[in-house]
Image (cartoon, rainbow, N blue to C red; front, top):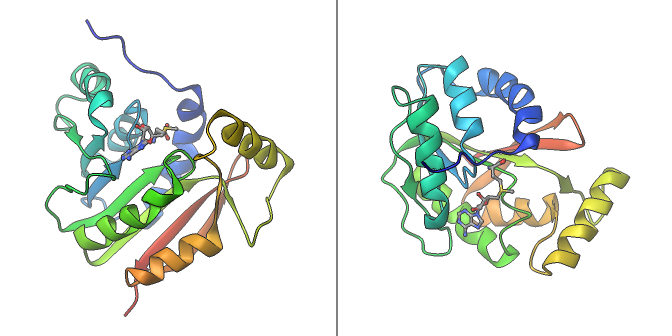
Length: 199
Ligand SMILES: C[S@@+](CC[C@H](N)C(=O)[O-])C[C@H]1O[C@@H](n2cnc3c(N)ncnc32)[C@H](O)[C@@H]1O
């Protein structure tokens, strides 16, 4: 049996996040999750919002763990996970009402961020939204000491990782015809950024 992957951070942040999603998404929204990791978010969100059509994706080496979690915890609500490596550019067919991605932008190299925004923009429906959860900085400034320390630890581990700046993300979004519509504060100095198509 594949051991279920587990993230303590997911256990802490899944409830605050779903309380935002309940406001942002219609109950039966079709959602594509990029970089689903352990699958804890998808299971929790679809438990509380059972009408969601939520497609879980991640890079190929994460799929066994994701599949195991879905099989054991939500086989009736979630389809088997699908491979999506932002670097490879093969996205599932849209349209989606939302693309959701949590704690991925500071993990993947910033060179991949344009592909994330472009891919999301392509698969979103007309009124679709790109929802990004995680820590972010603004105009070169961290919003908290804990984020500054986290950023330093990421960069020490791998120089291609690091907390991203909303200024850069807004520019990438604009290149794809998206604009930041909301910037919501969540616990532990995390945020949800919501990007929507420019009318
Ligand atoms: C810190 S984990 C976050 C997982 C989960 N979303 C969460 O909030 O706990 C970062 C995730 O980004 C994914 N990731 C990294 N590079 C990626 C890429 N090129 N394409 C898609 N996902 C990627 C990793 O596989 C991993 O699941």
